[in-house]
Length: 223
Image 1 (cartoon, one colour):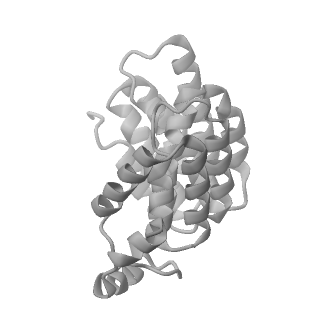
Image 2: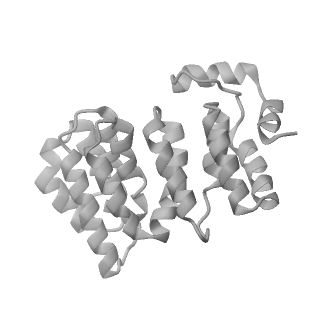
Image 3: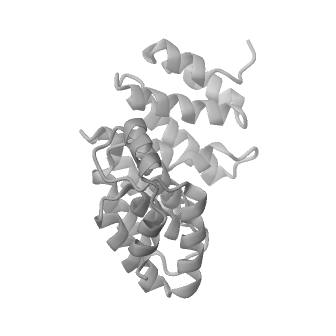
């Protein structure tokens, strides 16, 4: 069976209808839980070379089937890939087609691995901040969430953290709910590891955020 046929063999029409209603993005759904997709992608990853995995991921994404796109992202979600330029190029090519949070986030997790492997790629991601496509703007923050995690960042990590906070500041006035949520998510996660930077951001830019986003961003900060 082809990988797509393996996915289709697991289809659950009732769940597929529920997923369409939930995600609200007009595409085909198979109704397969993510853990079942991961079981298949683990098998495909073990059986294929890197070039074959890249080709398979590209073909699965091109089907525009929800679970096939999840599988495409899962195939490329791996910390150590060498060489990884073709993987990063493919993930970048998907960004303009993002149209809903779930697929965008699965692909963004794969993108996070490639950014932390080569932080110079932040130069490309920075150009997304001014994109007219809201999901591209959002991806700039979701893909860079690893820079919120260090308790004791190295100088270069701290510099990247400040750089991305600058993107958050640029997007704080963006009125789209998903962008507000992404800014809040970035600052909230940062606050658990670097409260001073999170407080400073909110002191300077919090007023530009919508109330729900400001509250979310400050959730873990003591009064």
